[in-house]
Length: 265
Length: 363
Ligand SMILES: Nc1ncnc2c1ncn2[C@@H]1O[C@H](COP(=O)(O)OP(=O)(O)OP(=O)(O)O)[C@@H](O)[C@H]1O
Ligand SMILES: [Mg+2]
Image 1 (cartoon, chains in turn blue, red):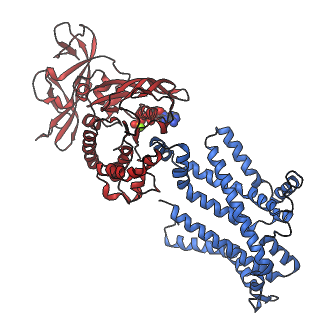
Image 2 (image 1 turned 90 degrees about the horizontal axis):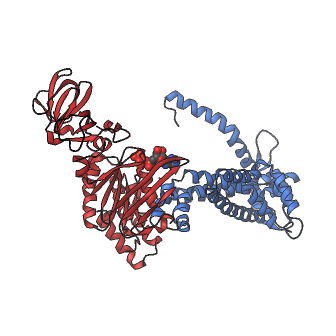
Image 3 (image 1 turned 90 degrees about the vertical axis):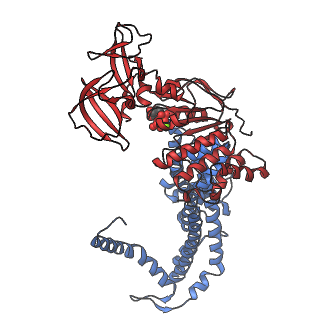
């Protein structure tokens, strides 16, 4: 932790708890508590129940969970492919071109996601590109939103990748494509999995653009949570939110396992 | 041989520039098939650049590079068929030792059945067969070094490029590896080796010929004996063997020069009387006490180096180095001593035969 004296260590922990507990832990704990509650009118919840989970893991909510998972997995795989490809291609560009590409991929992050949603809606509502009303428009919007993160984390890793590996491989007679598959991508694997996890988590939680685009048969979980709380079913919403958190965390843990296996130093 | 390249490297007027800054200036050099050529020079003299031009990682601004009789100047690196080992080894961290060694064979689509045998053979050659299953991070520096060499040799290249392969090793390991490289070359007599180093001991030990580089230029090229005993330039004399360089004037009489008012007997060869020249004497050929070509001066510094003493003596404002067998009684600073050297141990160089004489810093 870079703090060596004893009192310094204690102080660091104290600051950590003062900041972390109210900012991060308490809200999440409240959600968790709410999801097991039938009534929360006083300071503490009352009437413990698991009924909300029955709702949150069946019927519409289960459907929504699958929808979210499919959307997030497809969007992050697409984003990872496009983002890494662009990041790899950027290395062979001159500085000006690289800057342009950086700016291009940063655009969806700089623009509010509502605007991205609206833009996608307007752009794909007319033939020949009629995606409105299908699941594809949701996946597309998510892909656009998360590609920036894939691009920037992969290109940061490419910059750190020592060119000597690539050169050693080339001097041993490996074609550029062989170098890419056997050397560069494996060495970038930790960054790729980190990017995949990030994209997945972002897509799982995306609401604002999704709200503008989702067709009735493709309702992701965040929309479901929003709808539940909007109806006034706060505790059901909380249970669905816990399912969303749990699933996302589970997938991220899985990705992290691949990552530790893929890091060599 | 699947390496494709037959032995031998030829630089034909090769120049390399980075953004208008010439770092390799019209290099002309031929490495014969089966020859070990050391590229020796101070840091920044363009050695690595010359090597990279052979490997194909830098494109010459002008000139051609030949491997054997094939012009490879425009060829991408993976089509050149060379073996290369760099200072940091660059073993692929995500592959086990045997996969590292097999990499070149697989990349060149060697027959599948042949690969394990050739990997084993290459690892055997460098004595690393027992480590085939390890990852590079599980090896010591010297072991990584051997694997890097095995990987380069597995493709049976006609040309092996080594860029300061021993610089990451400690002194003991370095001399061991040096002997091993020499053995390796005896076992692979057809491979041409271009060996970049700034260490003159490595160059003298290993090389059939040494090319001395300074300031982007080839300064001198010859066998170690030639360069050591009969250097042609001041730069070579000071960089290879760290010679004493004394400014002298050639006297009119036969085989005599004038050094700060003293007459010294040295072979003057063709040098005309009255010409200025540089007298070159190796420190270990300078003796203490009276004798022929005596030079007296005051002790400026004494260094004990175990088996030898290095004396720095000021002779009329010129610093003369002498390496002497360990002295019983060390002279004190400021003592007046007399040094001498035999006429046949001195070489007379035309004055100003190198742009810089700064190599003396490598004591
Ligand atoms: N990619 C590059 N861009 C610009 N200048 C470079 C580049 N690579 C090398 N140089 C310059 O070229 C000159 C020669 O470099 P080179 O690496 O060939 O030296 P060297 O003789 O191998 O030195 P060393 O013994 O330190 O490795 C140096 O002045 C260096 O600064
Ligand atoms: Mg170098």
